[in-house]
Image 1 (cartoon, rainbow, N blue to C red):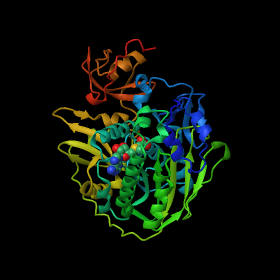
Image 2: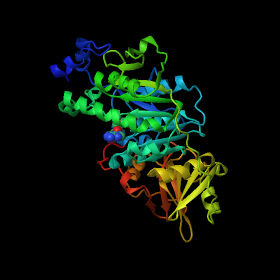
Image 3: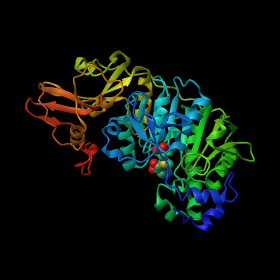
Image 4: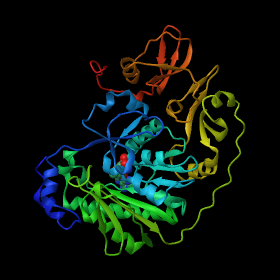
Length: 453
Ligand code: SAM
């Protein structure tokens, strides 16, 4: 791409670190392809690929494979994420070297790149709430959260203003705001067609609104990470200035390595932002900054955890989890969900204050003679390891992922099917044939014939 409009380039003239000629040249090159490996499921995937400097699980790929046709992608072995965005790993690790028992909100979370990164970073006692206001996008976020498989990763579908019901609740908040998208011009030419100064201005107004809505839910001394994939100062440093003027914020900086090519910019009020330009850092355009809340917040008291009746189906669900004693179950219309014990009070609170789309691991439901297991538990990293698993080759795995029947002679009953040892989902074997229990909405819709090798 080399048709960047002059008025766009002119508008960036005052941006720190902007170098017009090098920037234009970098836009004649293809976007960089990168993935982030799952810390548990992703061991050994993409061996030999170059690491991303600021994120130990990040890998650069020489070419862009058809990820849809890789069963490992569907198993959650890796997430396809733009490399610059993985800088969030470095930011969080620098602020909180050992994140323990934190409450974290990813406010604008779909499709889930930053959320799955956060899930990989936090300890089990931490709770990650990933929110997305647009319903169709929230379904994709939920699917990606299920695939990533962390029990402490919950998904909500709320407007940012609903978070004012949770004053002082979060220790860390990520606002990866909707923006004019200039940082993704190499990946998406539509973004280029839609770019205008008027839209930059509209986005900046919306960014202020979102931040004002979310701010009360942050604790005193809590951290707010603000990010956009826009180069425009109005959406980046000017938003930091707006925060300085409207909230009590303290600046926070993170150390950088010189060869990363990250540009540091400072605002007049003393806040710091980090800029990624494709001519200087190996990734697409990104802006990220972190501030600390320097004002007291009303602190919410957690409700007492409600005691649950012992479910009559306890034995059935317990056999699905590696450590059932760490969980408590909740049921809704006969659908059972396992919540980590330490998050039971959070569940009482959040289920009353927000539209909770996913909390904990969905285990399934009891039927007359058997337990109907949910897809969620098949992909969970907390699943019991002794559940019978049938290893599929690539052709069979793709058939399964297209929701076609995979006929393998096996004894009757529920089985997990796996590819390279990673679970893809459930089948129910009837002896000579089996039924495929992949959720319909998850199936691969493209023609996979000829791609099986
Ligand atoms: N964090 C995501 C990731 O890493 O995969 C990308 C988020 S994207 C930059 C911004 C998100 O904000 C989109 O999913 C969009 O639907 C959502 N959004 C749009 N309008 C919004 C609003 N008014 N309030 C909150 N979120 C909004």
